[in-house]
Length: 421
Image 1 (tube, rainbow, N blue to C red):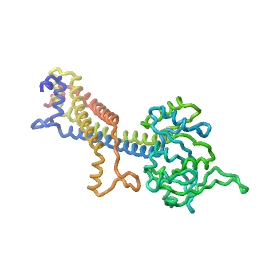
Image 2 (cartoon, rainbow, N blue to C red):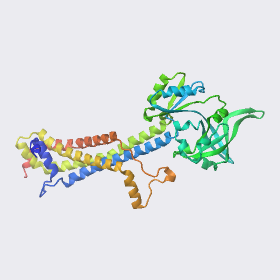
Image 3 (cartoon, rainbow, N blue to C red):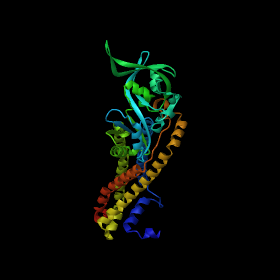
Image 4 (cartoon, rainbow, N blue to C red):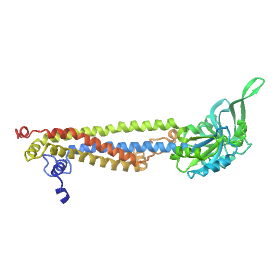
């Protein structure tokens, strides 16, 4: 209490105007109209935090599923093949960020089963090395990834690709490669029959419907290569992939081409960032509407308090002090509303895995069908920089909303205000 008494009189009056209405019979915590303004700001802040957290959660979920199949960095030899991939892998592992390396060869082809044709990416790998850079072996739901043996011409298909081809374990599919072979009848595509020994599910439709794995030796024979096309690397921190790729290019010997995962999916990540920016702008309008409500609150307060303003002016208060009183009142409402919104938004974002199932059980609905989205729960990834940014925007908008009413209050003329009192 002693601290409050030592505040400048502008703070004391501003706090009093915030706490009680003109006709209040007793000191209430806040007037009804200020409560509405505060609730509007809090609701907007909480909604923005929750929505951005859910969008971040979906982005993280999709990224993790993509990188369960993709490598963080791919290294290619400019000569078209990497005969001494063991030495290259040893050089790459000297970088402390690299935790795994594996050779690969990749091509595009057409998989044929009876009258069904499906385009696919055929990736040749070493089954014993592939777990170092991807989780495909763990994601193999049927059959075994280790059944890929050199010279066996076995194949592991994505679950959607296998479903489209209507093929099961032990059945045959035919791979047609675009690189043709000359015959007396002309150039014909190269054909090779493969036996399905596994079906994997990455949870990402792009890979489940268009990716197949064969043994690296079989892929080299199909592509008429004497060595792998390159190396795939896994890092301890995937977000440092662009920087690590530059470091590896400078430290490794040979004419190498580096490609990190962010470049492979640049369009998708750019689209997600654009959606997040637009969502931020749209939901910030909710806070702006609440700020306009704060303007009307302060205008009504100034109208009701004109006699008080006139008395303060006659007692020696300057227009600047009058302006400061109402700026303090509006800023307090904005700060309290922002604090309530941040607390509520963070609480919901951190417990959305409990709240959403409760709502689904209560209403008897399922927001995300696993058959469609491959995700049965709503993900959330709360990022504190987003929280601070949202809180800062809300406080700034609330402060800006106080400028006009405060300026209007400072222009009140004492004689005219007291004429009819």
